[in-house]
Length: 444
Image 1 (cartoon, rainbow, N blue to C red):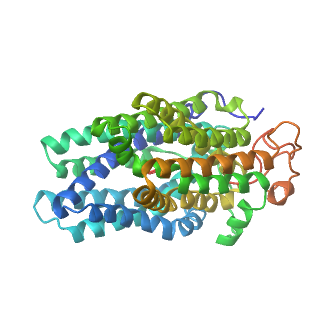
Image 2: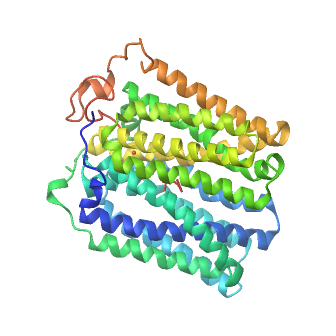
Image 3: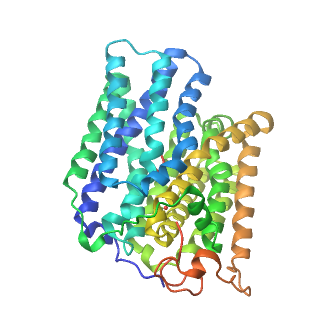
């Protein structure tokens, strides 16, 4: 069994408690801004295309610069960098609020500030994710990742609900101001964090290039398998969310209320998966759990496409959310704990690039298939691809009875971290890589 900290062990660390509280408050504010920004764009333009363009412009910088952000993460003081980046995000939200409140907001301003927020996030995401190990150490890292995922999923329950009420009663500007204020919780927490000598990470003078980080990821069977599987899920798995409104209206005939219930069911499942990993994750084998969770995700999406009623669809989406959370947390943990300290930022950057950067392509393909062949077809195709990819991965990695597991190769075999080499999934995760799903997994 993996050696790891106790249940909710990350909360033993004062620095992590400060960090996670600030993150939860800030994530609630971020979800409020996401809802308000979409409504503001629709009010200004009355164009679904322009609303989608705002989302695209926010995601584009992540696709373009997150890999380089991972390189930067390995070269800077992460706490100081986060103080700067979180301050810039505060200014972005404050600018939206002020322009909106004084009636100066226009679509070009919305486009520009959405792009600026995405640009800052491209560097903030890998730095924030790779900072977790400095707060809790490797033994409690999976617990910290799971709790971070829990904060993300719980915030997307509270944030949008609060935003809907505020937009209807006080206007979108108030949401932007509250988001700006929410960053103060992060900034205060970061200011109060003090380095723990027992968890100090060795600073490497050698500055690794981007190719070295990617070669490290693809140099061992398990990290390579999990990263490729996450790429499939980012394009063909999470894409069902983009067509869920159409699915609720045209397939289940449940309207806006049904759509809200479906989204909540997925969020409940994801939160349950994250909290369960925070509680008992140290008792399970990480790599196999990530792959079997992928199999469960693909199965759930196929069942969603075949769902005969709203009630059945809600149950399936709880399972889908739980499976996706388990896969993301386990993959993130294996990648981070196995990465050498001087490559962890790059590994996190590459993982974020896949999870956040590839997601818009998944939404695009799902929307195109839904428009030309039907929403059910789009969900069934995506779920089937995920199921086949996960099943093939399980077979190749020897998880089916009677098959030998592959020999260790690459960075894992050479022992780039002080981890025993043995059967995959047994012992501390071996060499290699880490929402927000905003998100994440997200943060992400």
